[in-house]
Image 1: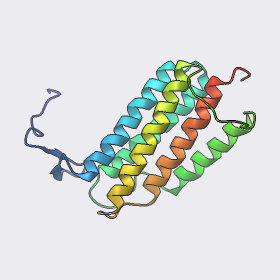
Image 2 (image 1 turned 180 degrees about the horizontal axis):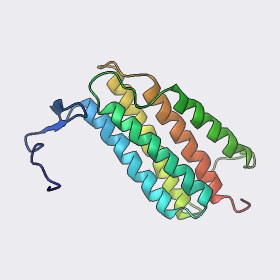
Image 3 (image 1 turned 60 degrees about the horizontal axis):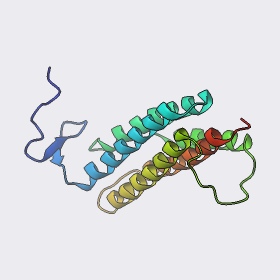
Length: 167
């Protein structure tokens, strides 16, 4: 089987449910940006040196794949749930507890992994904005942008962990 199908050559793409929609739609823009976030996470995981950070990024990628599945569905989404938000908040709290308090603005880029995590953070924020735009025209579960919001927060904390020399 070939990687190219030619089914998108007319400007449409298929959803998980088989429905075809315009590639310029807000839905495709939203899940495409979530896909970009996954690529940024992959780069961060490749650059990071600390195993705890790399393992945490992999967990984020797995949640992110579920989020993409929700967005690429045409009906009610059920790949993610409220428990994902709870898990992310717990992970953020645990990671923050291992770090010194923030006393000034943090300029990322002390390490390649930290810089990549900051890029992932900002990509997640853009994806969240795209989903909120989509919410203005389609019935989208409100947890979806909330999950992205927590994932971007977690990227910030993971960046701090990766760049902290005392961990």
